[in-house]
Image (tube, rainbow, N blue to C red; front, side, top):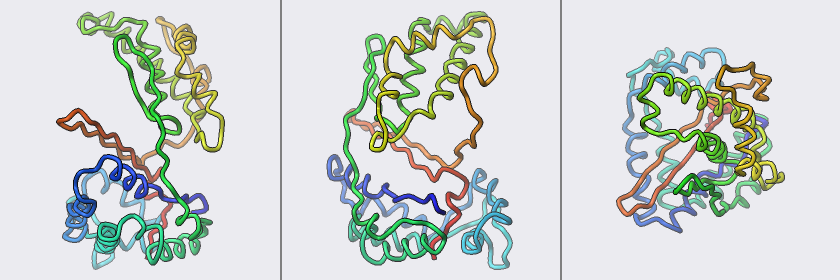
Length: 279
């Protein structure tokens, strides 16, 4: 709970809607409000983690995932999120300010601080979304655009930059030996990118110099020179340090008829986030 930060997602959606939105703000919330209020069956992937609640969750959060007899819910059981629906209705009707100021903000900060967090009412009220220019690299006849750090697009750009000199084509995947070698090189590129991603930091608090280096052709060439077509190496070779994989991330990409595209990543970083469930 001490690591809970300011939730900026609503401000981000508000800014995106102001810049590009066509539908009324309130209408965007209605499907989710309906789902939360009327209930939905627990999907199998979520049910897999609910037993974690037995020993690791706070009582309010455990209660959320229990039936009237106190038994943990299972896949297919119905769950309602009526308090969430109430909160979303306030944001839908009053705008993002309803979340960052007033009663929602006061209740949020009270529960965070009671759990040991340090976020303040002032932190919420002063939060603003930042609009930045996309970064880009050239891949053959294409330009790849991606959000700057701390987003992970830069690592994908590095992987593709490494692979472009291998001249992969659909024909590559039709021959067994070439196909095996292609997959081997892709996996090796993944490993190097995985070892380097710890250097991707928020540019608001650290230098972009290292991240910029990852976009350079010369850097991709250097990494490519470290990839052996004959075999692989231990984790140390790729500078990979053990860490706990994130399991709380959801991503969605949408392409519209007019060619516009939206790519959104949302994360709580780990199973049930901070384990703090607001009253």
